[in-house]
Image (tube, rainbow, N blue to C red):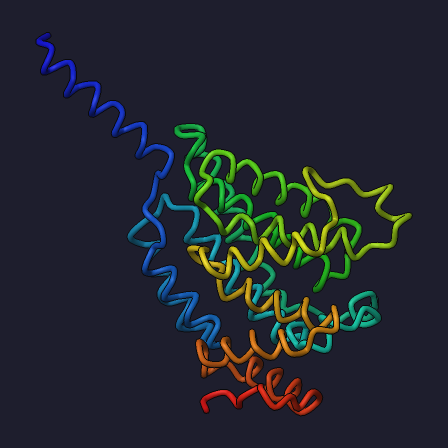
Length: 289
């Protein structure tokens, strides 16, 4: 082999290794489009886009993972769980009063979760650095956490899924540092642990989690700026945290941005107007103004 040919060969090997860490170019336009529909509460439109994407990319675990997120988001909206008053009122969160979940949506949700996990594990056997597969597993455990905690009222059971989601997020960030969406999970973990009573923290351990609310906000702000897919959801969580931490100006600022991003979302507009009427700050402009 000539020196020139050897150099070219080594260059191709290095290029292939670089592609392995990135695996799939992000963001994927079809998934971004589906998320835009979902945040505008066009759930049927989101599912149509994802169905088409999954048909053309049957081996990508992100398709069914985001399909599951659309089912979860729809069900949480139907059950009024997404309302700001619910998410900022601890007594309502802790309540064991159940609203029966839709059995058909539950079946569709868990089927999509299972498909995402199966595809992700298969791809990780071929490439441990596959960012789509790692993130699909992170999403799957996070969504199971939400379904168990908020819909089925199985909060203690949900903690094991939350820990596993955190572990997947940490692994993804180690292998693919630029995948900032994983910081959404670590941000949620930081805030959740940081909000627990001191004595409870002794019994609940999350990997590499300090329980710092400041770090939680920093992580979510990073996702809101740099995330491939979860920027809008990070902004929603930031608005909720600001309300919970008695920072209505910051919450209103974030909600104003969200109402401009997703003008067809009635919940965001309603929560923004509710906050505006409760805290009529002069610097808070009406959405669309």
